[in-house]
View: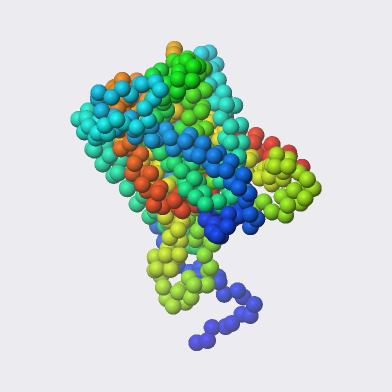
Length: 301
Length: 303
């Protein structure tokens, strides 16, 4: 835990604007330097965002347009949404999207509730076995998921939950790392307010719900976002636990689409755009929390 | 009745009283999930690795038979080789490139928050989406080859050659990870005292020199953290190679990684759970060893 705490100050992606173009030390940036900086930034931008735009462009190209031309044509000559209706005819892409949404939403709810409760107990309540309980979560965080998927699969079979969406959600329902994140957030709150509430006769539950929880909304948002992203993007686990095509999530559906109709790039492109658009929208709205999550989440290794 | 006041006693211990059960009720959901779906599977992986359990058949204790079989399994060595190569290919790039990127987006010039967010987009996207985007880009007739052809280099079979495939998958891993580690480095760079840079500049050190003798030492502990995180993740690589090389791992399965082998061996109705568990144990051991190795390297440099 200590490594990142040492190096992480406030969220990095803010910064006060000053009328002149100055660097982080308040010195003026020279025009020549500014030019090469923007050139480099644009080059990296082309590399990181370009592939997404190319995919979008491919998905909008009609059946008569040559998508293999060399030199390539970056913009569709006659943009059409035809591929999006065709992908829905080929695989039940909207059902898969709904399955992904169910899984991701359930994961957000269980992670927020479960890790807030457990985190509060570990941070604020005193009980015999608290240290041991904390250790359990630390150990669980260190177990690599890839190493236990087979045993998770046999566990699900024993519970009769393989090939269900509940089975997709359960292993990640309360992430050990999220519990420890919440514990850290609760611990950093001042004791005095809760103490005052205790003196006024508030129960544990009231102190948790009315006083502590509202003060850790930021961390809770980070937990929610990473739970959503983790569930929406996950591939290995749903691939193992789901076998019935009607239960597929979007990622598994896309893999299926790719395997079955690999020669139709327009279709696959439309499918990937459908899968990635919601997350990019979410990211655009809630960037602050995404970046904050990196700082707090990097501890997990 | 007045309670006797003991002087010098800190008041905060009073918060201790509560129903004896309630802490456990608070921790129960988390403990249940973590216990049933992380710790129990972990223990059961260890146990199963000494049995010949299959998906539909309960296993018998077979001692070290699975591990002996590993030693003679060519596919295991292929997987171990590829996962190890993956570390060697990916980790240096993920330690250095995001640091350079962080330096590039660090200055608060107009529009920089847009660039920071844009560079982070690949992190947000699902690995399946990213994999399929690059499968299309690197296709025999895809964009990269069209560009290569139009500048006269000619088309390259990125996805048909065993080694080019592995390299392409590594490139995709690096591409997807850049933004994530960039944010980690940005936080670290904010802690480098600016006086150091100024002093170095006064002493006549150029930008490269300042990078090597001021920036790198200042963010060294972060570099170690990034190396640890990225090497563990690289060793566990699954999705990139699965998507780009196909479920069977490219030409003659030569691009299979260790986790792909786990998935292929252990799932399905005929899955060899026992043998896949033995493979998983290897994944554990190497993962833990990697972390210890990197952390020890850090300590040694400190001394």
